[in-house]
Length: 140
Image (cartoon, rainbow, N blue to C red; front, side):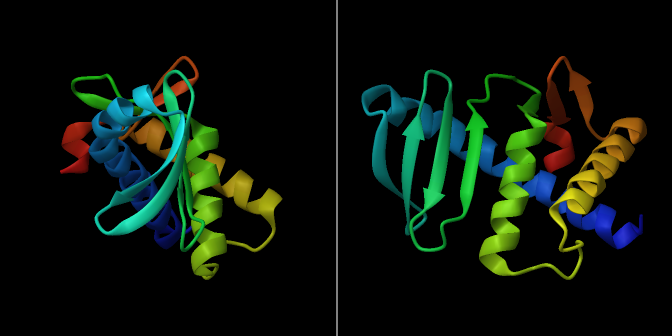
């Protein structure tokens, strides 16, 4: 796997986890009142659907999808591999940015797993049961 692909994948981790960090508290408050609703974030319109401790945001213009569990950790952000990979797939579909990833979904899935494992080995992310965590310091 080339370094450009690894860097692109890590960029996705950063975008995804930064978004979770920024939106988690605000959305958790709003979701406690309504289980689905329209919301505007930084002048972009979204629709959200929520369960007890997670939410799915869909950009109404681009249909970019982001699902995550509300972050309750002090020093790190936790995420699930499937939610991260669904976010990447959604972004690739919306933006057409296929140049850094293969077009076959099975090959991409294996590539995503390989990237995730490399970042686990390097210590940039950690695994905790079914969760992965990234330090908030890594996001700075």
